[in-house]
Structures are given as C-alpha cells and as structure tokens.
Image (cartoon, rainbow, N blue to C red; front, side):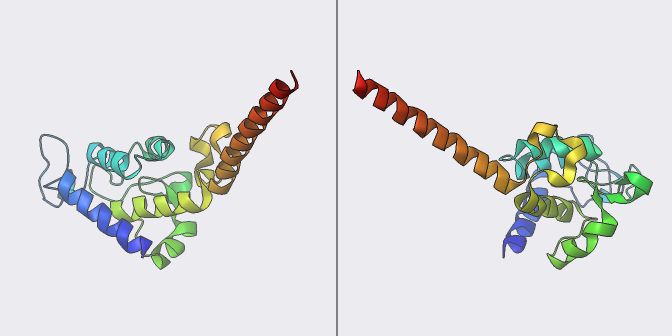
Length: 169
C-alpha cells in the first residue's frame, strides 16, 4: 500500500511541478530536456519536495548524480563503477533492480528512483550511500532512533539527579 501511495504522490508532484513534464520540447525554464525528460533543476525541486523531512537525502541526491536521472541526450543516466549505477540516487542496478521491481519501483524512472530511495532510507537509513554521507551520519534508522531515546533518558536522569541534589540541601 505504501508503494502505491508513494508512486501516486510522485506522479502527482511531477504533473503539478512541471506542467510540460511529458512534452517533447525543452522549455526556457529548464524543466524538461530531450524527449520530455525532466532536467536536473526540475528533479532537484522534486527531490526537495519528496525529501523535505529528510534533508540528508537531498544532499545524497546532489552528491550521487547532481540531481540527474537522464543524460543530455535523454537517456537514463548511468554512472559509478563501470557505469552500473542508475538514476538520481545511483543504485547499483545489478543489486537493486530486482528488489525495486518487486516493490513496484522502476529505477529507470524518476518516480521509481525516488520512491525506492525513500523505501530504502526507511529500511536502512543512509547506509547505502556511505560515500556521500559524513561518517557521523552513517547510521541506520533504528540506530538513529536509539540514539534519540538515549539522549532523552540521559536528560531525564540529569533532571532526577538535580532534584535529588536539591532535596539534600
């Protein structure tokens, strides 16, 4: 169900943010390129919208592909080691294509690439993008939650200690 919602949301955003997203001509604002493929400027806007609550993912997309899903010729963008990484979030196609398709995400599309990135982040945090994340931020989602809880516990213990010391005076 989450997959259908993500996909529908991404398609709706594409249509709202770029009225000529599926047109065949480039526009003066740079929202489309060859054969109606979204430009890096339009993709950056979409990434910022989809990952507004997760700024690190915006920076990961910038680092991985400079917000490119397509080449200037309109082909799907491949980069990385031996050209085996695909799209905005530069997934190793040989590793991620099958699981992404099983979840309903086509990595060759903007919607699929961003949707799978959102899914993978919810499962693994920033771990899949180690090369684009400062070492201090490479934590899976569960570890990040545990750290936040530990900080709350420490704060509560400090408050209890302060109350105990105040009552002894």
